[in-house]
Image (tube, rainbow, N blue to C red; front, side):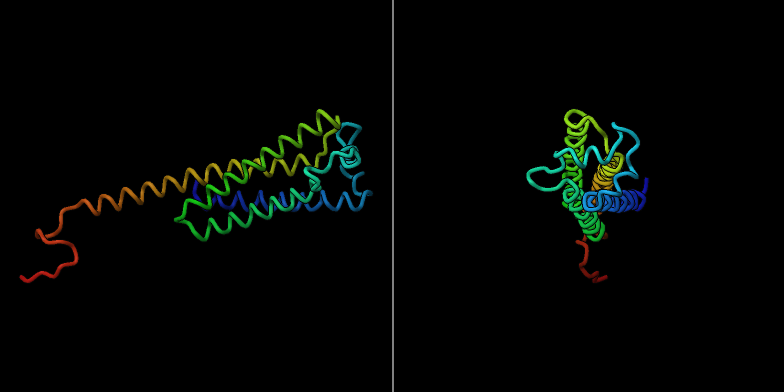
Length: 173
């Protein structure tokens, strides 16, 4: 897969995840929207939203989602502008790994404590997992390109100089 395709997947999934996270916030403000994603007593945004388990460390979960997806898009943008720096793809991978950890925790809370599943939340988690998988692919691709550049540089530097003279020196012939 080309690096451009991987970056596009990150932007697409991150952007859709941000939209879903914003919708989740709007649902908490406008409770009438919860009926659109309530199928039954188990698949229910309303059951999750009204459970009392929608904050982590005192921060509303929707804020965590919105902030997380914005940060993903910002880090991905920086990683794209600094293509030769390995720091940014690795930072994106670390951050998305933390996001997957949060989503697994949120899934546990919904299934084990609330006994309900919010389909909007689930879709945000899926977009987060897609960004995580794409981040893994990006790190692998960027590392591969860095190894190729290093191999090319070392092969150029190891070649014998022309006419026995160091590169850059003028010939007096």
